Image (cartoon, rainbow, N blue to C red):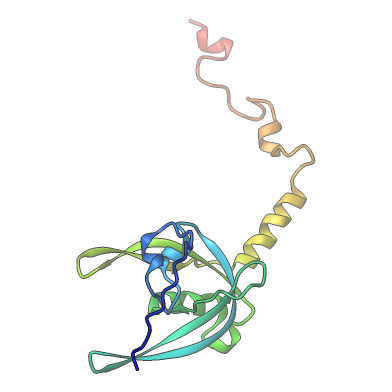
Length: 168
């Protein structure tokens, strides 16, 4: 009995042609050129065979800011895994619940510039708390005190500004 070929056409609205191809993991083009923050749900390990060699690497399962599961896991390279470990410790089981910010950039691979994803080396939750604190402690009119003072207050006058500078 002959197998039937089934095809389904869809417009996924991607901003990068590479998103239209099959992918089993989250790739740089899924960021659509923008930095994005995600919550780590869990970390597992992917074992794969490549040219007779078994490769193992961590996979992060993520949620977006609305709590929706990201359909593809993020395969961590050593650089990104190290960054997350610097933020949240070496134990991947303790990364769950923490936020990470991913951003698109490039790296050099065998003399070629390639697109890649990097993890920003800062805790997004801590950054948000600091920004909130700064907003709360800012003067009510939104101007910094240093900006409010008059030019010359406590400053040494510029050369030639004093009458004694013109005395002969």
